[in-house]
Image (tube, rainbow, N blue to C red; front, top):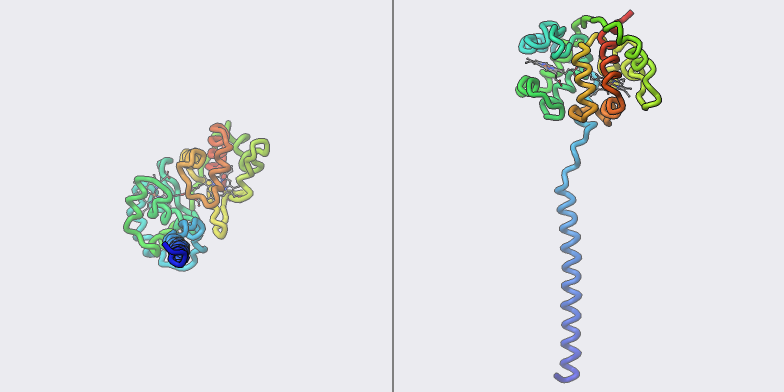
Length: 237
Ligand code: HEC
Ligand code: HEC
């Protein structure tokens, strides 16, 4: 090879290397853009969970749909058997959120999954309105649970980081529909305790921002049972 040929060879060789490098960078940029686009945004919990306060709907549609719920939850949403929660008086927005969560599989229960499969979003809102309009029945707390239950409900247990339930669910357990804090008053103690235990274990995890999971995880079995009894006996003065 002459010196002249050498120069040409090296110049071409350098050009080829530069070309390959540019192509690799371009490929990397394009690939990055494409894969980033394909990354679906993680299902936003707030989107799934924030149903605005429901004020309009067809309560008669809710009433007729509620006939299929009556076997378990009672005709007016006051179930007799404590394994089935009372729905009467519950805020429409909270009921509708739970029904949506059951349908989306975010809240898991075999009995409820079958019940919501064919419901539209409007049906869920209408059911919420129907149950909200029913008067919830109240119960009684076991006398031996009242002391501890009331302490937890009204003051929490600061040593273990348990906040007062009252601060969100209200002094009489009425909850707050705008903030999606459910009504608890009069609910069967057995059901309330089962939900707190499920939150504690993370088996129920449809609470926005982990709010109930982090509270229940700090509670003992004794505190859970006492506060659930206290809630069953709560009523409007
Ligand atoms: C076969 C019995 C059964 C039927 C029928 C049934 N449910 Fe339920 N429902 C349950 C059980 C059990 C739970 C508690 C699930 C759990 O432990 O998480 C529940 C929970 C719920 C909750 C959550 C309550 C809360 O306080 O968080 C709502 C809302 C609800 N049901 C609405 C309905 C509606 C509306 C219908 C009719 C379309 C219906 N259910 C029919 C058994 C039933
Ligand atoms: C910071 C506010 C906050 C505090 C404090 C709080 N909760 Fe809750 N709680 C919520 C929210 C929000 C939900 C609804 C979760 C969902 O969307 O499913 C809820 C749900 C519940 C439920 C489920 C109700 C049902 O019908 O299934 C129970 C039971 C409950 N809370 C009990 C308690 C008890 C007992 C305490 C006190 C130890 C407490 N909560 C303290 C916000 C709070």
